[in-house]
Length: 79
Length: 537
Image (tube, rainbow over all chains, first blue to last red; front, side, top):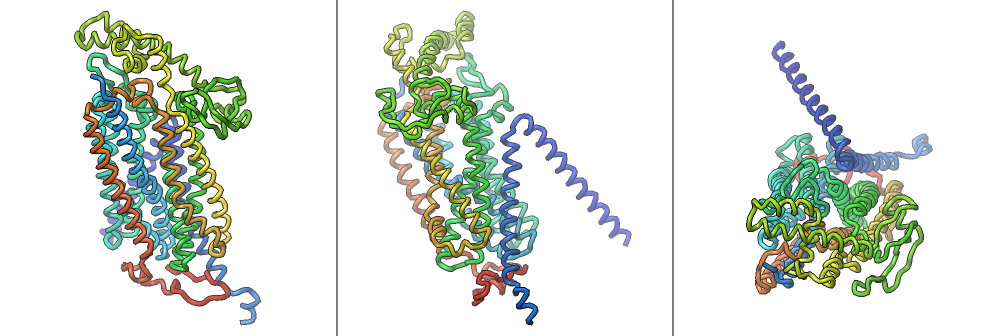
């Protein structure tokens, strides 16, 4: 049991370390690109935004279809 | 040694032909990889298998395009050595580094991860596969970044200086090379142009399926995602086009003059030539339709700003050529005796106009005897072929605006989930597929024809950059390349059309755990809500 807890703690710590490294790398990249390569920075941010909005559009379509497939309130009451 | 003018022309045509062929494939890879990343992100976050099917299907088309893109790109790198050996020796110290990084990115990072992406669906976890797909997208775009850094050095040589002792240019600042304003705006402009290309392609193929009532659920989602991806990318590509024009106005005024058909300098606010018929021989536009004030606004972002016309630029070139003559003469002395201090001092005093001295050497091999007519002829060379640049630019801009209008309409209808009923829009979407490819090629022509008469702007003229091949050799290799690349295009078209006709695998065909749980996507009559099937994951 204690070995399992230790393993979980180590794994959590490693994840923490990984995410911290990514966060520091992102901050460093943003600082350097913000100062010297504004368009490169804009590309990174803009690409992420375009991809996520496009992805959200796909997910939204599923929601619209699910709503459209649901019976109308009057129909629901009758049943 | 003077290079035969026909050999230079054939070398240019060969490079242009191979680059234009290659550039048919590249933008689709740049954009489709990120569109795939978007589709797979939805699959991983929602667990709905239709998004996995989408990623697999569009991934197959990406693979076809990628393979032929790499095949056509390979020969271009060799051409620098075979056909442009003087250029390669002159700027190899700078040009070689980004080109090598580009090769490493393309062949190691991008190719490795694209293999994992295509063949790793059943071998990697969802998260791992998504990470691989994102790495393919970043790898392909970062590969493009390095080639565009190299290209931007040719447009605006920063971070390097000519060394008269080694007789070639040497890198002085790597950060200046990669943060070159031209590289920044050109990379983002080119990358997002790729996004637009992929969005039009995906929307067009999806529209084809909707018109044929095949794979409708997959097509609707692909169309929706492509339309949103495309509208944002088109806004970005236009914004970056403006930024690039702003950079060109400062660093490549001759290109800008050609893009705008601007033969004579004018007072602010300058009018914009909407349509014009430039005559290079007469140094004027034979006919034109002008919009008042617009040019000042577009290129200087003010009503009081001006940009020089060809006449002023040619006058400046005359004085720069006169200043470049002592630099070239000193260089000839240094070639014989590198320790000649007087020659070195003379060279340093005139080094900034060395390239202009080279321009005159084309017409006056002995610079001591250069006549005013030869000087004027060399000065006239600094203006690129105006009609070709002017019209390529207008084709690119007009098609960019057309794509923006198309995407706005497509987004409106797809967000209302009415796209399947708009047959006219679906037909338009299919016909729109070639449009971004034409716009990309036109943009490439503007960038590269507008750089003439230089291979490295203001530094190394094209006439002295080529190798000393024979005309027969160049003609033979040019025909060979055109035949080979035409075969590549035919193969690409055949494979693409075949893959599109076959369409995505039907539910269950693809294998893997996700594909078996999609019964609700099977075609069934649902008159009340014809497209309302639930998509459980």
